[in-house]
Image (tube, rainbow, N blue to C red):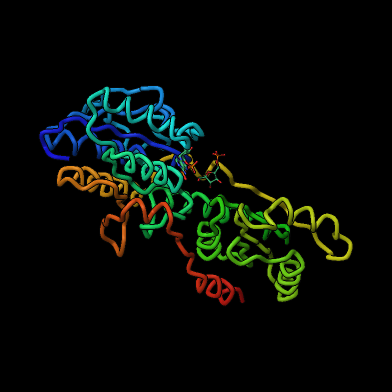
Amino acid sequence: MENKSKQIAVLTSGGDAPGMNAAIRAVVRTGIDKGWSVCGVRHGYAGLIDGDFVGLGARSVGGIIQQGGTILGSSRCPEFKTEEGRLKAVNNLRHQGIDALVVIGGGGSQTGAYELSRLDYPVVGVASTIDNDLYGTDISIGVDTALNIALEAIDRLKTTASAHHRAFVVEVMGRDCGYLALMAGIAGGAEFVVIPEMETDPETVARRLRFDYRKGKAHALVVVAEGANYNAQRLHQYFLEHKERLGFELRVTIIGHVQRGGAPSAFDRLLATRLAATATECLARGESGVMVGLINGRTATTPLAEIATGKKELDLSLLDLARSLNK
Ligand code: ADP
Ligand code: F6P
């Protein structure tokens, strides 16, 4: 986008993530700093299709850096997956005189951004999802906060588990990705981690927990990713059905959406601010059709075409690390 173009828009899409507000704030304020006007789109791609725009000034984004959620609202919008929906969206953007769009969101949202760029509309993505499954970035906005929330729950569960010599299974979010579960398992000192990238059967879990119990452990904690074949509910069910033979039951805690709520950590505020500021920098130098992420500690852009097709691999050597730490 050349600097004669003066209006940009920003939206948040998909699952909200702590730090999205810090990203909105940085888009608005760095945009204003460049002499542009900035508007927000309410409720993600749904607002783009409905033409739901709101002007944002420096003051409208005051006091939000520490807030979870997103002041613009977010949505899952099936209509945007259709060509017709996207054409409506681009028409609305052009009709409003908006020259470029910043999309803050996860993998689905960035695929949507790619589709917009294929319609010749200038768009820059900002990596934001608690799942950390997004290609083109080492870490996304919201991951650090979500991980810390999961850890707090695990730490608390361990104390009550120890008091009663009980076995617990804790399920964390992550969609089809085991990143949050694996990291929470390592940082929380779990006895066992179950992730979709390396499926496990309940008998293996039971054997491991019995082994740990015989070693004299006061508690046993399994962290399971929601996307694993044997998620918390299925593990629980299996242990109930085989209670007599296995000799113990598993108590279940599903952390769920709690992981997406609350104040973003310092890391997420800083990450969001850096990625969003880089997004407006991209637009200022005429670069679009890319997503901004963090690679090797530096902000970096990757073409949206690669983001839409690339698969982020989980480092499975960390699963071996988790196993080797359980003694
Ligand atoms: P996230 O961005 O957190 O991964 P979703 O996968 O739900 O969340 O995607 C958010 C939104 O992005 C979807 O509701 C839809 O509007 C849009 N989207 C997802 N996939 C596509 C696609 N293949 N083409 C166009 N838009 C898409
Ligand atoms: O992508 C973020 C995420 O929280 C996933 O971890 C989870 O599977 C999904 O969104 C839940 O979606 P919803 O909030 O629509 O129930």
